[in-house]
Image 1 (spheres, one colour):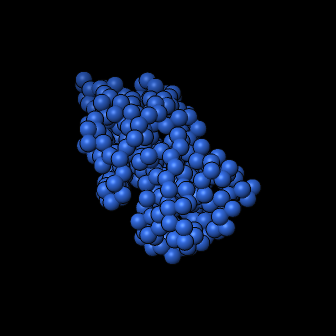
Image 2 (cartoon, helix red, strand yellow):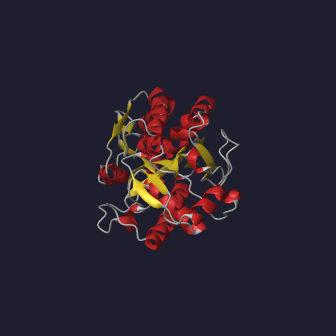
Image 3 (cartoon, helix red, strand yellow):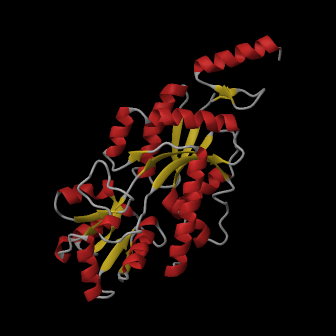
Length: 325
């Protein structure tokens, strides 16, 4: 390609909002982009993928297709992305609290979360909320701890499945407080809220968005949130750490990853454009209504968060002797 032609091509790409993935290649993107989600439609990852996808579709002029591939705590989708062609057309909406425990749970995991992905950007942080059924009388974390210590092993807590994020959050709480519960796993987060509301289990964690209708109806007590700070949209809920149990923090982070070896120019473009989407007031408002906060980042920061989560859950899994189903 002649120098003047190369300059003209680059200027055209800039005007259109595209960049070449690598010298001599076609601009990016020129066809639909697929974002895999490791959970069923309607969950937090699905919600984020669709909100961001709609905005990127408007900007790029290319459809962002959300492909739900639930299974194995999102590891099925993660493996598909890890093995995909690293051209920027296959992405993954990752939930750190689902992916990070996997290396400690599955000795034959088919991918390495730190080696087989290119980290693009964090997109949001969320929080879980510790709940009790009103019949327990527990309205604070300390109330629950005192009750559990008077009835060791008698209280039942629900989770979304063995070794899932809600199970691990409860095991971390047990380790931090010295209490014991009887674990009752369910097939998903929604059944946990239903079981809590019906009184089948007395306590458990759930996403704030999933539990909020029952909290507002006074059918469940919200004791505290699991993050390092209170949720902006729900400032009345204290954190577990400030409730008298410092050191407890479980923050579900959501972010976009791609196969390893994706062109650096594509990572840079996606990071920049997703960051712009996350800065939009309507996007921030829609995330806040779901108990989430927009949280763009550098690729390096996202990788660090994942590494820290892998280390945290490795300790919890080992100490609790957790085995996958």
